[in-house]
Image (cartoon, rainbow, N blue to C red):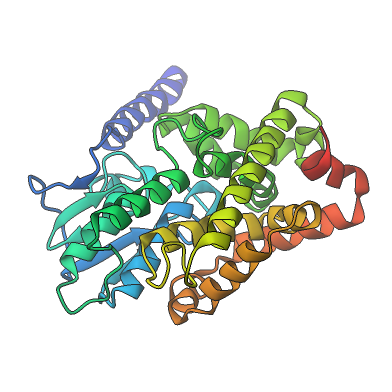
Length: 337
């Protein structure tokens, strides 16, 4: 009888895990609209996004700028609470387990930059034009979109040529700070079901060791500071381009998808403390003025400010306070070699 008290729970546990693993199986998806798939929906447009996700922010901005009425679904990442992206429910919406996803009339649209362009076409002829008609301007806009993009398959693979590839490394100190507020058992779920075991391993280490110890590890610190040095050059490129542009926006008089993408990049630098660091070490007057204009747009309030997350807001304040109090930590995070 005693042995069965051990065996039965073990069998039940194995069966549960096998079933749950099957329900949480992810696979890559191709960017753009998937007309072969129809998912459960209640409104013509539904947006699944995360409040902190860089790519999600772009899609909220474009939907608000285009004045598209949509139903909003917040999807948690581990840094905002739990691995909702790999829940069986969300994987039915996006089998890759990535955010954001736009659902239009039941058909999912994957990858943020594809969503930006799709939304412009779906918004109708009366909507604001965020994509230029002029082929040369459109090509230039796409160049800036690519410059700011984070590739889902290799997010840090092109730091020398893309500002977006520097974002994951520069966000690392804030990730580490935010994870202090996430229960360890939620992080451990990633070892069971997340396809990339390095993520739960890193976040577990961040939870247990903290920012000071992790930033003392040379490979991690070098990765962060390599992102910093590449980003500094990218900001110089942006500042130079803005100085030559006739008009308030990156392509001149008209606000485009390029401005949405660049604005989200600058926001990430601001909330992680890097924008202040760069402004202290470099002269970016045109870029600073441009960013202030972006934040003054009404839809910045609705798409960005109104979607703040309490864990991230606390982590931002924690990071600023800790690095202000501890000069050695500031050096490790921002100014060291």
